[in-house]
Image (cartoon, rainbow, N blue to C red):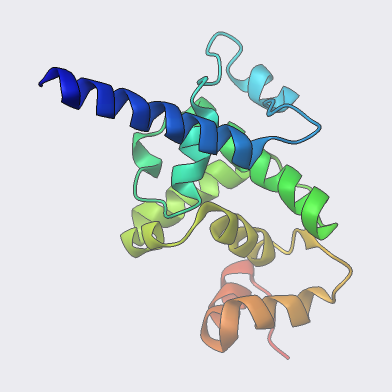
Length: 161
């Protein structure tokens, strides 16, 4: 690599980090939830978590390359953002949703084309764990569509109406 290429690469890295930091800056620092620490007390969350989340906000193609502790922290951040920005609650743990996302990607790799926030919301709706004041059945039909809604009802052992 030439000296000029190294300088350009360094500038790109700095700009990317600055943009990512600006994207995720808020009154609260990006902190992993206590449940992340209890699940993996010896493994810290990556200092590059904002960059990882920024990538997952584009698509999930890199999801399986992300360490589990960072996956859980990223999902926890999405749950926090839903609470803050949409006044919605997701009660199951970030670990639960990380496992479900991993299962979905293994079963259907095309899921990697969806963004992390979209996937967290879909899974929470599928689990009837997305609390935004809307009727859960109506929300599931709206978010999942008719075919996936019916398949999900069967998966959960619920009778269709």
